[in-house]
Length: 490
Image 1 (cartoon, helix red, strand yellow):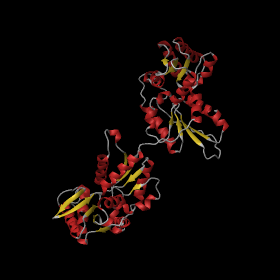
Image 2 (cartoon, rainbow, N blue to C red):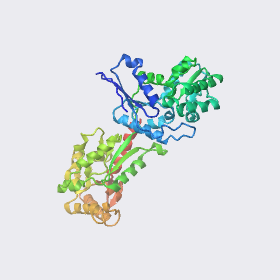
Image 3 (tube, rainbow, N blue to C red):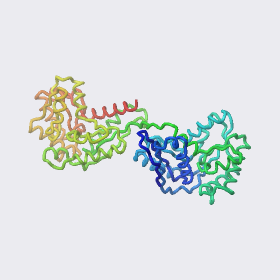
Image 4 (spheres, helix red, strand yellow):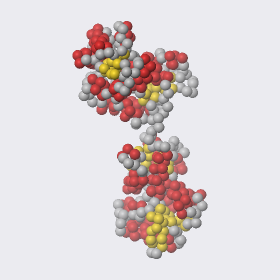
């Protein structure tokens, strides 16, 4: 179910999503109290409210001490994710049981899930002296979760109804003809009242709700002289008067994988190896689409075969939708198509080629001859040549016969894409590398992401009496992505 309050033209309109379905009447009551709150009535064009409710299979299960939260967590997450995708600014979660895992949900979202417990605690600190006793009416699950002790236990004494009153309270809330089903007077109301008397007998000066449905009978309790709080009223005030700036999520790297498959795994390994981490949680989030069905980049450039641009763009958009802050494409030849794609994306593609050329210039200077071992598609596209020219460097490529050896090493029956990393393919690459060194290249770019599976990044590699530096663009790209992640978290 969706409801929306009409909005005015103000540029600062604020949209709040309400997770319904965990208690239909309580959710509806919250919506009503939001709409009639002072902040909304004074500025009716500012606020948009969306109440979203879907079937939740465990909604009728009582929240006993051993209740499982798994399906509830997943339900809440899916509704929250839907809200985030629709551009909502903040989310309200009117359910105390769900507040026990609110922080877990929050970690996976880029918009705030407003903390109902914070709204409650802020108010209590205004009306109750530190050290006073608070009586909490909560489900068995919330009671045993320690939610209220964690939030209030340092400043207040927290007490609950006695065992008999607690059983009656659970029945009044979740039983047949209970408050959750809309029966707000008679036996259910009397049972709640007796639970209030139970905590008062233990010295409680304030009755604190641990069930959102208690808002439905709060006015009746107050008329009977019970100092009870209306959590929906407090939560509505908190949401409409407080700030809810978007939170910053941990950096997430999107990877266009499958171009080729082994090179993708190699790149991910280099990201992991290059990340300063003392535990699993210190590593970089990565979302990968391993898509070997992206048409061959070299075949497109050399033979005018299927253009891979659409497939690459679609993959990048899916990574963007998955929350990637930057995108890496561990394929040199694919960078011939990057400029076509980048202007249509909201997140940057980290350009492996320009990063590699910049690294060579900074490490070895401008006076080195740079050889390129790459696919014929990369060579023909001139993407490395263009990047080198902007940096003041000159690229040397193999003569045609030697370029054929490079292509055979990559695509041949015993080539790297066929799973070989030793033997003929290695020999063919070394012959081409020696040729480049003979014509003066002292720095060699391993300009196909399969090549570092055979030859490693090395400052001084001996080739028949000549020393060359082997530069692995995959490693340079991985280092840059690690640096970006570190900068995002600083």
